[in-house]
Image 1 (tube, helix red, strand yellow):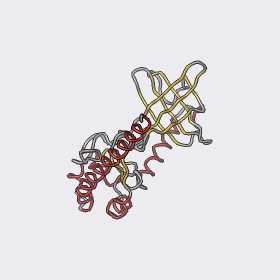
Image 2 (spheres, one colour; image 1 turned 120 degrees about the vertical axis):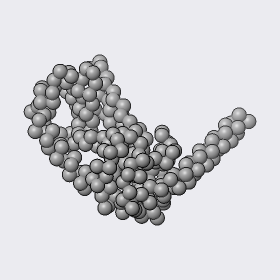
Image 3 (cartoon, helix red, strand yellow; image 1 turned 90 degrees about the vertical axis):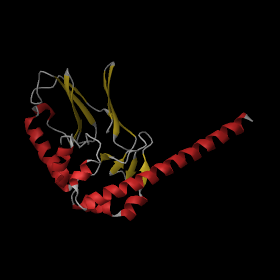
Image 4 (spheres, one colour; image 1 turned 180 degrees about the vertical axis):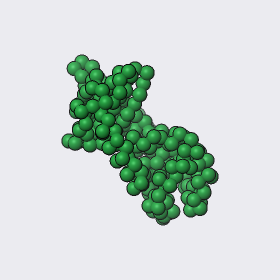
Length: 227
């Protein structure tokens, strides 16, 4: 009897979850149509009102912190290919997903997410212009880095706390490296600590990642959530 009841409860929970996801997608679809209209008209000022700030951008590009910053960055982010993707509603609405952690709804294989209020919470799409900007900033950073850490494939994180500067890189062999300096130093100084062969684990579909590094008896963990 208890086993049958447990199965029934699981089925009820699954049905409720599917129903909740359906309603989230239905609401997001309606909200997305409002965004589509603004994109179609290149109405940047109105579109800036439909963003959750800061809007994360890939390192080393600065995050978009304000409406004014979004208006200036709009041509870089919303290039012709991204706008074409958004305006292709058949593809856009056939490829929707609910993030199991945030419950935000993603469109077009997770290139863009809306929260429950219908605001853009995440843009994972990188335009050609933004990609060129990333490459240029990476090359600039590369010229500044201390010679001992100049070899890497792409930067993953750059963090600053009251005590440390921390950088996490993807290496040429696809391993992950941790570097830290005391906050009195700069990236062109020799690092205080370098850890290699870290573990990178993805959490959810919106870009949440956990980085774990071992240093003898110590474990360093960085939880990054792209919100």
